[in-house]
Length: 115
Image 1 (cartoon, rainbow, N blue to C red):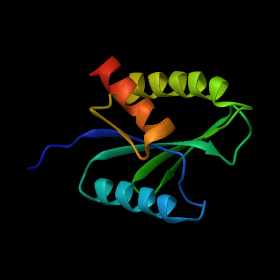
Image 2 (spheres, rainbow, N blue to C red; image 1 turned 180 degrees about the vertical axis):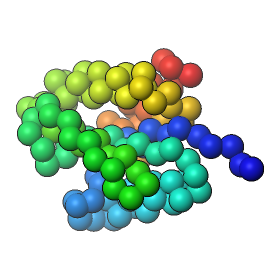
Image 3 (spheres, one colour; image 1 turned 180 degrees about the horizontal axis):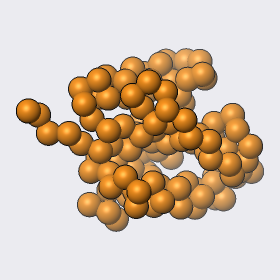
Image 4 (tube, helix red, strand yellow; image 1 turned 90 degrees about the horizontal axis):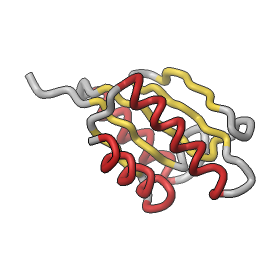
């Protein structure tokens, strides 16, 4: 049997948002989950209250939507805290950022910090 990984997929675009990046994010996370991996999505800048985190299971994927604050300088430390909390609970083995900034930065930073 293939190895199962615990994956945190960080993105600033995810359905119900429209567009190619949102569609790509959903497709990749769904396919990873269908192959038996434990997949969590951190959707940065989601359409939720600022600083709020709304979590819900969507199919086989757990999606955490983080409401952006007034500036990236304030939102990034909040995202850092959310990632640390999720990692403590789940124990991610892979951090994937689906774009260079801010998702790629957060994924690389946390992979270096935790792995």
